[in-house]
Length: 272
Image (cartoon, rainbow, N blue to C red):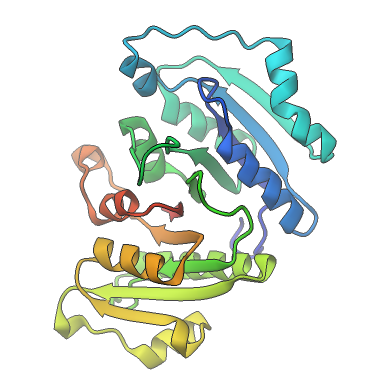
């Protein structure tokens, strides 16, 4: 999704061959139905080593013709343009990033939930992907409706830090595009921890273009506030931002963005 073009054209779908149901692919197929002109889908088929090690490296998989035919059958039936690559790599997140760059990807879609759990279980490799991706990453939750009805965008409008200002703009741009495409109700949440940082509500309404009743400003931990608002309004997807780090900071976890992701039992889009 370029700066001047509010569309999503090319989508990378992460396929985990160990999973029986490819929830990320279901989201992409629905996206093709919704977005004007449809999308091109690139299938990144790979076993993530972090997940494989949970099974003590004991997993056997054959990417047979019949398995692949079953995988892409919905794409063929919907006449969706797609390409696919199979990767065996110990450097999973950099392989994804390389595919994003080579294929001019506008969004990465991956499933990071099992069917019998609440919230996210981010592996180190997936967290590295979220930290490094140059395009939005959609983490799919299995039990959310495919068609978006309510979108929640989390912003931090009380700061003048240029990096956060840019991040807010990207979040609002994506929320605006998705709300228009899906015919979904757009909500904005702005959490603040210090009473001296209370955001200007009039500015929030003006800058976000959201209805006054859809603006949620609350004091407290961003993770708890965003999760509570998402539950209250029944959000299908939450859009949040995270700032990339370098060096030793890139290896540190437990920041606010990860706290938020772990608390949400719904689709989450992360912008870097």
